Length: 61
Image 1 (cartoon, helix red, strand yellow):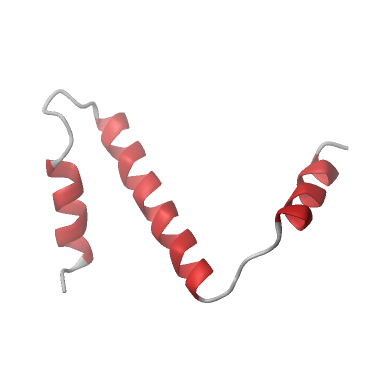
Image 2: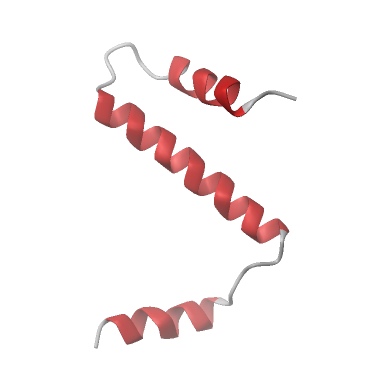
């Protein structure tokens, strides 16, 4: 099993050599958000699409 540092290092190394700091940080943030979402899903911390739709509509008021 790899460490978080090793995982993130591999992710950075896969980026093109001409990537900007902002692009790399964006990739890292995306990776972290996806991993968090998968962890939440595995732990059944999810809501239905209908509930999410209601939440979004309430923000638009």
